[in-house]
Image 1: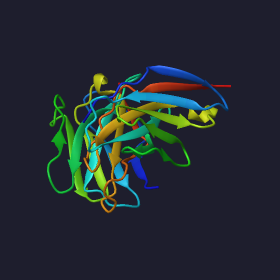
Image 2 (image 1 turned 90 degrees about the vertical axis):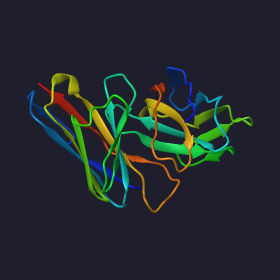
Image 3 (image 1 turned 120 degrees about the vertical axis):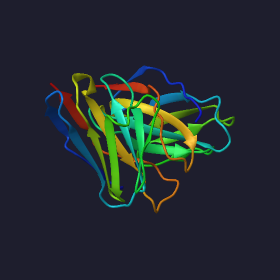
Amino acid sequence: DAKTTQPTSMDCAEGRAANLPCNHSTISGNEYVYWYRQIHSQGPQYIIHGLKNNETNEMASLIITEDRKSSTLILPHATLRDTAVYYCIVRVQGAQKLVFGQGTRLTINP
Amino acid sequence: GAVVSQHPSWVICKSGTSVKIECRSLDFQATTMFWYRQFPKQSLMLMATSNEGSKATYEQGVEKDKFLINHASLTLSTLTVTSAHPEDSSFYICSARDLDRVNTEAFFGQGTRLTVV
């Protein structure tokens, strides 16, 4: 699976949009971009995934660049409960295991 | 969404004893489950892939005789930490994917915090 690079930490004000970047310059054509988050002392929670088109669900939006070498997870109206570590993972869809990098520690400030 | 449940949520045990952690998929079947370990302020590290009806596949550096994995049914995998020592204290997390929903996301249990004293 391709490796990803994320900032170690980010801060965002409550109510504002949180934009979390991820670089995956070695991504191959059949690899998807997945985002998970982990709130302190809990198991990871799935957020969203995509291949090349932008995706949106009730939690977030995923913007993938045209060359697919990077992506951005957008939490449109961040709340204090969005404080967590966010992991960007690329893998072949259908492949079994998920390999986690260091992720981005996002802190939402009141 | 699919639910994966771990038991216990936390456990304290004496050094030298063994501890069993259960991972159940509550509303779907999973031929494959995964076990992760997470130390404080670190990311999740994949330990092993648990395969129903066959031997688990361990990641490099993980002792298979230390971390015994049993996946006897499509809804249950267990991880037994044998002869636990303080350095085994960690947060253990399992995950599973729905057998009938190919190409879907993995679901994670809530984790088990093991403290060896």
